[in-house]
Image 1 (cartoon, helix red, strand yellow):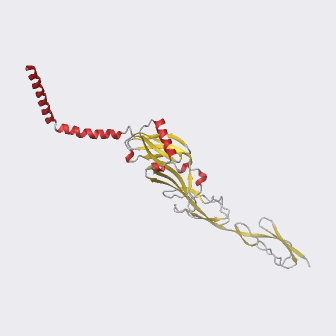
Image 2 (image 1 turned 60 degrees about the vertical axis):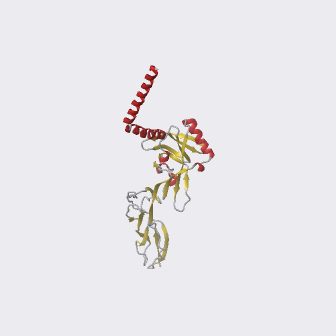
Image 3 (image 1 turned 90 degrees about the horizontal axis):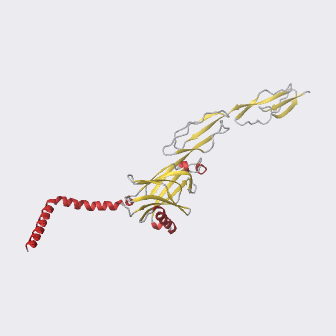
Length: 322
């Protein structure tokens, strides 16, 4: 009896097995082969009742997979369901009020992958915390090292806290006083101590403190009411043992002082109490009532003056006669 061979091959021509059987006998097929992104759907020819040598090739049906997009509170983006390995257009990034879009939990694939995946949006939120002093900040997140925040759900917080003299070390206090006296010619020193911190917060993670930025940011301090009305407002920074006077702009009309910095530690807003315009106001407030009283009683004062002059003349005339 004759024998014939069925050669089983994969879709790309790769040999799987050969099955040799007697005439009119069915060949023995291998275990169903697998192919990434496809489902095996059978063989292209029959191998029952073999009457000749044949090639048998596996056939497949392409699978579809879904990319689910979770914007986590941002604008809704529809899921993408397509055939495996097909190309697609990237959607526009989502928008979320009060947040900055910070990428996805993983890189987008170039084509539809061989599995269902979910892409989660990542968000950054910038917050300002003021304790005892009002401020305004520009450009914080853009100045954070991208390696610290890229692709993360994080809150970038800048915290300002006004400190009392007891919260400042003697070394810092002396350094600030010396700098104000020697470089700024401030004799009667007034000072507002402020600590500035930049903190990156993430859920289930330890807070990370950022001591230096990649570029400077602009900070505006609102001078507290009790410290307004003085002269020569300046900003001094004490950072890692170095004391510096920073370039700043004082706005008398808005009672603010603005400066740029990229390092965070202890800051002092210093001013000269000795040249306070507050004293001029006190003097003005003292003179105005006196002037007003003088104006109201001007007629009485004039009469008293005339009377005094006449008395003086009479005395002089009397002495001459004597």
